[in-house]
Image (cartoon, rainbow, N blue to C red; front, side, top):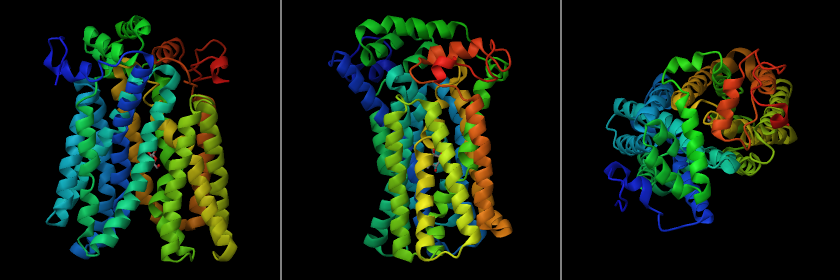
Length: 491
Ligand code: BGC
């Protein structure tokens, strides 16, 4: 479908689709379309992690498995995702962001079909592992691609689209589960639920095949002219040369060594990425999301009300993420993160108190539902989207994919740890203390963000990197450890 004269057939789709459309508005629109398509990575991530909650009781009817196998079917996805994230970063640096997205789309497609037609539980586990691998790749390459095609002034909004898509994917999963459970009304409905994933996978694959490669990756791959062609599509004429020079300037001073991430100048980025990754999970979000129906059911809401309340929480998650998309380039990353984690801490305290001290009925039950909803709301407005956004912003270009991969692996590993330990924690110390424990962790998360996370609002990726190169822990001129932007920027 190429209609360009770059002479490189691999480049045809990368330079042509919207070539006829000129001007700044058109290039911005193209960036929006590209970012939205790339955010389908997030939709698949959300859908495939969310769909299992409704499918698992039906799968149990078909195969009749033990609790252990059930836990494996649920959590093997997280192990697959950690693996996908580990490899995805390197692949994205080697093959390019676009090709890795296409690879991910194929994996989603094949594994969704495979899950739908699994003849036995072993096959199902195998394909769940594969879909997890796809999720891990998607969790990296979506934000990476978006951050690299976005202009600085709207990079925050575009970067948080991935999280918006994750929350929409979770909601879609609830909906798909509900529709197929009522339409098919047989034990085999789960096959349709899991198989539904082929649809967004196909859209992602077909859409991505027509999008350009990231100009930043093209420079990294010594394809400056192709990078210029792409920039011409996504920027106004006048800014193309400046941006290309800026990217090349950064590229020239880079080494290709992964150990770069461990060097003292780059270490703050590594610590911020991995720290946010772990805190995003060990403050308990997925125990609330995965176990919401159980928690809500157990406080005496009745099955239907519990399902509706769960859908309500899914909607809160989406709506507050939209607030983050809207505010992240205005208020900035740090204020939103601090509000988010502060609010989550308070809500965890309240939930802990309710579960510890009271009998859950009447008004108290509704206060519990409200604090659960508020907890998710606070997560959605900050820690949820901004983690995925920032890990695509803070690493040096030459190791951006790998750096982001490291943070993503830490996120999936922490997710797995929390998911596997939640029920035993509740069993051992009780639900009240479990939420209090997450609350204490949230206090540490707040301190961590306050001390170490820089503001990246409105800065180009190259400026962020230049700042990082100028500052390392302990050696900033009079600055605090880890603060790699100026006071003015953090304001
Ligand atoms: C987290 C997921 C979580 C989701 C909920 C994401 O940012 O990484 O673990 O399930 O948000 O919206």
